[in-house]
Amino acid sequence: DAKTTQPPSMDCAEGRAANLPCNHSTISGNEYVYWYRQIHSQGPQYIIHGLKNNETNEMASLIITEDRKSSTLILPHATLRDTAVYYCIVRVLGGSGGSNYKLTFGKGTLLTVNP
Amino acid sequence: DAGVIQSPRHEVTEMGQEVTLRCKPISGHNSLFWYRQTMMRGLELLIYFNNNVPIDDSGMPEDRFSAKMPNASFSTLKIQPSEPRDSAVYFCASSLKGGVNQPQHFGDGTRLSIL
Image (tube, rainbow over all chains, first blue to last red):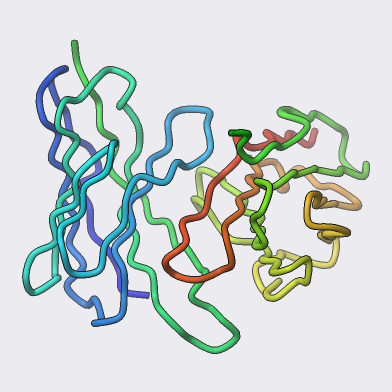
């Protein structure tokens, strides 16, 4: 799997947009970018994923650069409940034995939303 | 909708005892995953089932660990005998198939402490 690089921590004011960057410069053409988050004492929560195009759902937007070497997760109006560790994961497609199921979690970014 | 259900939420036991962790995946999901999370190693995939069959158990640390999935709605992870280094949070996740485009949905985990 392509490695990802995220800042260890970020702060955001409540009500403002939170923009979380992720570098994945070695990503391959068939690898998806996935975002999960983990709120304290809970399991990881799926947020969004994409391949090439920008994606939006009820939780967030995902902006992927044209060369696909980096992406940004945007929480448009951050709330205190968005305080969590956010993981950017590049997920390989294919592989022997169906290894495309694997999620490899790094250390993520601790986002702290302040009142 | 009911998510992935894990039990117990917390388990404290003495070294040498058998520990059994339980998981009920989301109804209709046919892939199930067991993960372990520690401060030192982060989130690690232990084993992956597809249609109740273990596909990849390369992450299982040693023979003291075993996992079963007797039917589509239930899985167990057993540690026998348990050791203090097994202390961690164990997560179960499920998804539709195991494909790269299917997000995994996690339970809230079992926090295991081996004394």
